[in-house]
Length: 292
Image 1: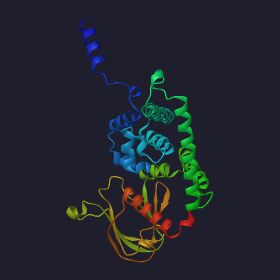
Image 2: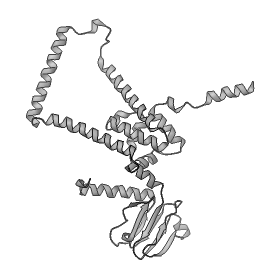
Image 3: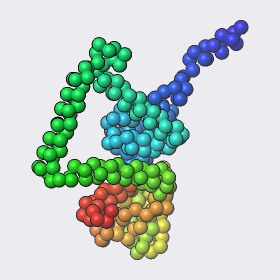
Image 4: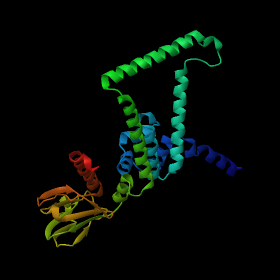
């Protein structure tokens, strides 16, 4: 008898299955069960944190488009270990339900009430007025902005959405996507390779108390130093940052400088180097947008 009562108590206190929750709640619960902050998901996926907040809140209308809502949710699901296809299908369902509710609210009339239906004359007048308004808007638009621009804008918008969909699909299908690469790099080893004889000091936040660096001395050309993964806020001092090649998880990242210049207290954790890589890429794109 006691065992039956205990069993019933367990069932009452059991948490609901993830499948019964909305998409945003399922992703949030999976993240919290792994002890991850939303900022960590943003760093892993390169998705802005405000978009991740919208996804967890189920506010998909706040995202740039339906395509981004589905693609971002799939990428989020991959990081927290949920089934990407299930999450994508659930997002589509929630988007469809949201559109259905908007259509119902915009209707304004109950289909089964003949007394609320407009007369045929009023319906024809409304249709004619709509046609005249559409023609007027088109004529004004064509005159003011140039004929054909409206159609071209619509075509360009569709092409942009298709391009965005293709980018997200490629990111989901390829291990070389930006999100996938950053996730691999963030969990990989940081290795510095000297390409010339140079002096360097690697140290972390404990150096001020212990005065013991992680490494200090001369590196010859070809020497390699692997940064300990448990280093506390690792940093570097050197006068030859241009002579140090850097890899994270086997992937190359920009050097700390392109010319001999003394640097001190430069952060060299994987996260700091990846953030610097993003800044360098953005600056390169701004200077030479044709490169992309």
